[in-house]
Length: 85
Image 1 (cartoon, rainbow, N blue to C red):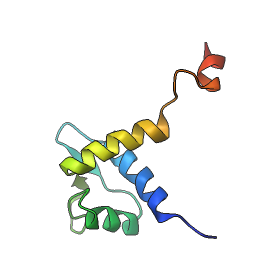
Image 2: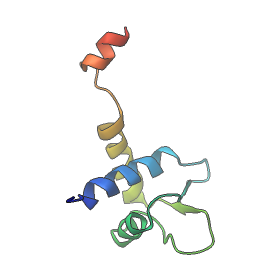
Image 3: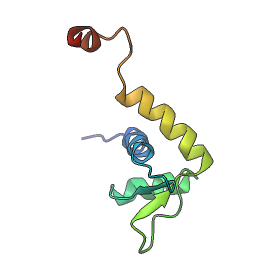
Image 4: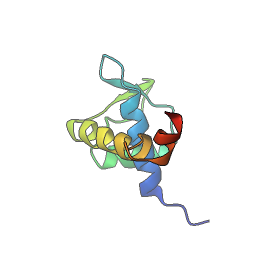
């Protein structure tokens, strides 16, 4: 199987953004390899350590919000939305 790590990382970043607490920290219960790649790209704080959460950088916050919208929200014209009305 040819896994697209960029797509996995995009989904992880979007979910980290969605799970931000008021402190700006997100639980880091995702694949370690993906967390390391996100850190290497400057999108999250260092995931290594005893803390159970990470902080998204300014770039990580912006990209995470955009990815969440792109990956996990329905557009107004989508068939799923029309069938729920």
